[in-house]
Image 1 (cartoon, rainbow, N blue to C red):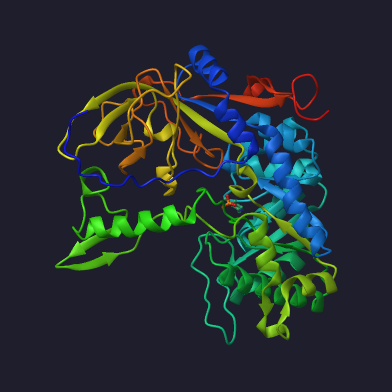
Image 2 (cartoon, rainbow, N blue to C red):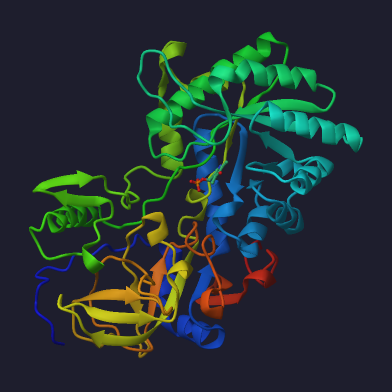
Length: 493
Ligand SMILES: *Cc1c(COP(=O)(O)O)cnc(C)c1O
C-alpha cells in the first residue's frame, strides 16, 4: 500500500442509519445496477421516510395538545417524489420561489396547505395571492406591495404571516442574531398599523420567525417575543391565531457521540501541530494556530446531536417564558388556543436519501500516506461539506464481498479539473481499501446536500435522482419525477 504509517488509529465518523437507509445500503446489487444504468453520481430518495418524519413531529404536537401545521421547507430538496409523498400526508409545504409554488400546487397541495416566504418577485406574489396561499411578509413595504396587487387584480383577501426578527428578552441576556428577513420586534407597531391600513386586502393570521441557529434559548426568546406581539394584535382588535416558529430543528448525522468528540479534539491537536494533519493542506475548518495559541472557531455542523428534529421541538416547547410567569411555552400556546406552525427542512428530510458515487481511481500518492480516491462526482453533487457536515461514506463493494485490506486513510476527490474539487477536505478513514468500480454511499444527503448547490460545471450533468421504496424484502425504484404516491409505484397503499 505504501506511504508512511502516520495514522496510528483510524478516526471514524460513522453515519447514523435508520432501518430504511441501512436496508438500502445493504442492497448492493440494486445500488450497482442503478448506477450502471443511470450513471454516477446518483441521488436516491426514500419518500416513505418523509411521511414517517411528519408523524414524529405530529406526535410532539399531540403530546403538548397543540394544533397547527407542519410546513416542509421545500428549498432543502427539489425532489418531486418527496413532495408528492408529503402531499399524501396531512402536512403542508413552505415555498420560497415561483417554481417551488408551482411544484407544490402540481404535487397536490391545495393552497390552504401552502405558505410562501422569502424574497418574492411580482410573479411569485401574484400566483400566491391568486391561488390563496398564505404569504409570509417581511415588513410594511411588502404588505403595501401585496395589498396593491390584491386591489389591482380584484383578488380575495390574502392571509399573511408577519415575520419578525431581532428579539430581545428582559432579564435573560439572549439577543437573537441579526436577520435580513422579518421586521425587528421593536418596529412591530408599524407593521400592525400597515395590517390595519390594508384590512380590505390582507388578513393577518399569525406571526412568524425563522432563526438559523441551533440555540434553543434563542428560539425560546423569539417565541416568547411572538406571544407578546400577538397580545398587541388582540388589543388592536386583530385576531391572528398562529405562531410560526420556522425551521432549524436539525439532524444528528453521526451514530456515535464519542467518535465526534474524539475527532474534533484530534482536529484541534492537528491544527496545533501536535499530531499529523487530518485534512488536505492542513485546512482547519475555521481553527488556526497563532504563535502556539488556538484561534478561530470550528465552522462545522454539530454532526452528533443528542437533541434534534422532533425532540428539539419538544425541548423548545418545554422552555419557560420568563416574562410570562416562567410558564412553559407550550402551556401558553395551549391556553390561548394558538396554532403552532413549524417549517422543518433538514429535519423532515432526516434519513430520506443517500448519494452514490462510483470510485474511478485509487492511487497512492502524497507524503501523508493517505490514498487518493477519485470519484465520478463533483463536490457540489455531494454538498455535505458545504454545510459543514463531516460524515464517512459507506463502501458498497462491486464484488459483493469486502476485499481490500484496511483500514486506510483516503482523500476523496471529485471529477473536475480543479484543485479545489474535493468532496471533503478531511482525511477520511475507511475500514478497507476501496477499489475502482466500488460505490461510496453518502448517507442522509436529502437535506440540502443533493441539489441545493448543484451545477453543470465542465458540462458534466447534475446527478440524477431516483425514488426507492421497499416491497417486502426487495427495493423498487423509479425516476424521481415518475413517482406518484399510488400503488403499485410505491408509498400510500
Ligand atoms: C430554510 C428555511 C427553513 C428550513 O430550515 P431548516 O434548517 O432546513 O429546518 C424554514 N423556514 C424558512 C423561512 C427558511 O428560510
